[in-house]
Image (cartoon, rainbow, N blue to C red):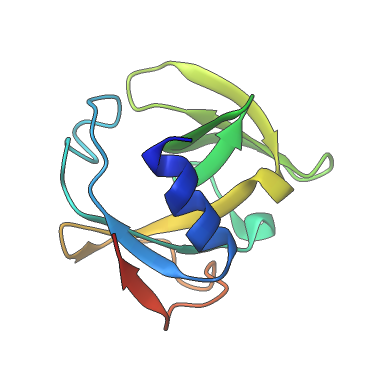
Length: 121
């Protein structure tokens, strides 16, 4: 079980979680070790460009929504360098990134399920 699995479990349980992911796949949107805040999300409201915490093929990613298929209740997840991780169902999208290093992300209004139970990792 990796660090993102633990965060995903907390977010799926209703918590808004602040943590510092590592890696370069989301640069320049998120740089390694920048603090991000992820809140539970209503996946039916997701749009291309949203940054989500989702499980794809058994792995949890903090990546971009690159395509939306409302009819099949799924989204496509990709990094910020052109790599497509794959499609995943709405049930496997647990959170949306609402801030990076204290800067709120635009376009997240109305997409979160709760935003008042902030925890820190």
